[in-house]
Length: 335
Image 1: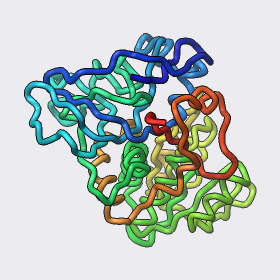
Image 2: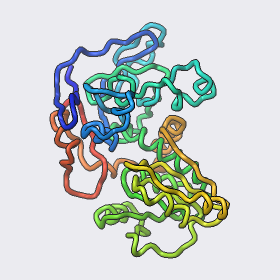
Image 3: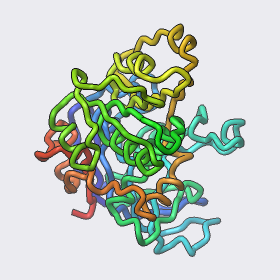
Image 4: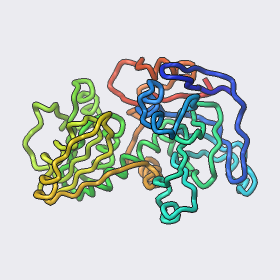
């Protein structure tokens, strides 16, 4: 089968690889759509920390945002899964440690991550092997584009749950990229008044096209009281700014990861009686995301700028993007 393989920083292409077979407890999925995120770009340019701490190494098959159809089941798997449209969890724990037994497999010390950690091949390929325990069925109302947006949506939903907005609360989202915009969508669906802070005119214009009229550049951000601030930016100076901007007694949520350490004055955190929440992984938010997509409460499809084939992946990962403000690129491995 065809797969996109990264062999070294800045080097990768489509190659023929042995197709996966369904091991006991696993299924094989024919991939219909896969999303590309900043983590994939970091693996491609060599800056991803997992490459330097031993959790990942080249060659790699990327792709952790995906959906498709089950075409094969291994021993111990109900054959009724065959033919079902699914997406799945990226984080695959050992299922035996204290964290896994407590429902926190996404924090398992020995976890593998599809297309990211521990050598588990990703979804930038025609087929993907996945443990059946990681699968989430997709209803007909969730098409291929939305199905491949479940994983980023799960991250965003968890961030909004961490912000815990009540109807009418004012929520500020820092960074109108894919995760930030999804956070804004979930917060709006929860009844919050949503504001966004962005660095470029194009990103702010796109946010406004989605109905977020309160999209601000740093020099125009109004001095309003924000009940919660979600940092989805990846800018190292913004974690501290989030604490400055949030109302006393409010909540700050950190889901963006900067390329270098961020400084945060915990004295201000304590003196303002602020609750700080960190979010890693979509895992506990996948089911809720599917529900909100299926109901129409949140529609992620406008965030997809284009869908390309595997042969265009190297250019996309190197930064070649279509014009327009939508932040997400999808891949159809069948092209």
